[in-house]
Length: 91
Image (cartoon, rainbow, N blue to C red; front, side, top):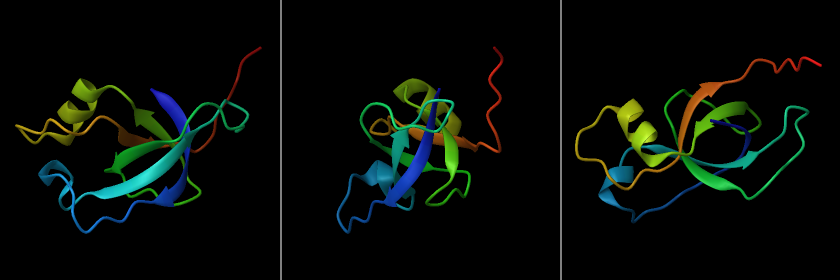
């Protein structure tokens, strides 16, 4: 799982059938302090998140497809699985 910040929408009139009817976002992985790390990703949203939200992202195709619970979906790799309220880091 990755902690990320939702930074944008993805709008597409023509897309793979597995993405039909799904809300797509660009997410930027962040460290526990909220600083950007690594490259941004496109993720399917299933938890009604929005731009500016900190979210949990599954970046493992098999796990993401299991969470969507739609047999036969193969193209989805990243999935927003939760909205983060706060991050506590123990020292």
